[in-house]
Image (tube, rainbow, N blue to C red):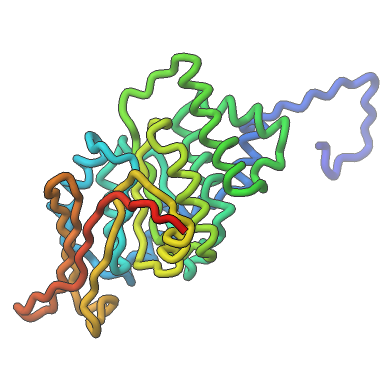
Length: 291
């Protein structure tokens, strides 16, 4: 205030600061979020040019149908890195609640930024939720640096439950898209993220679509700990030796429903007429194993 001013006197002056920025709690949230991790960020726009493109019409149509009417609150899709999650997020339009795209090349691999960034996006779309978060973070700014379980509970689950208890109506479940899940830096963190999401699945007005490449470390943790998930789960079968990340190939994704299961079939097409099956996915509930 009054920078570089001189040669004047103010007697009995009253100064009032008018702060036109958002509330202090929301500012804390924004400062700890990663805007470049959202599907529509400028950083993502150019990153997609190096990713294989998919023929996606049928897949996205059926994905949107799951998003709007599917019985499973969580869908995990595993396969070669592609632009499929981006296409799904864009086609969801108003049905998209939030997105987060892990990418080690973009230095977006810190699991502690996931729920903070999702909460920041939700606060943008739901004013009543934003008010609750603002109050919470004013009272306890350290929430943004708590454990994954505490972050999810305090920044997402509890505020939404509070709104539901007050009679707030969410007319339709919206989708949260998480891309590049295997690029989250820690397998233990990936396990913890899936665990806390699963614990609240069905109780919150969200569906979760989680895209990743095959992740043997995570599968091992899930099997060892006997985590039973009532969600669509991917079992991946690959054909050895196919250069699935080569820019000269076109990945085709097809989603098929059969006897209550959801399947995704990928085919790999070269610029010649030859078409080979690259990866098949079969989604089914993961059964808990003892031991």
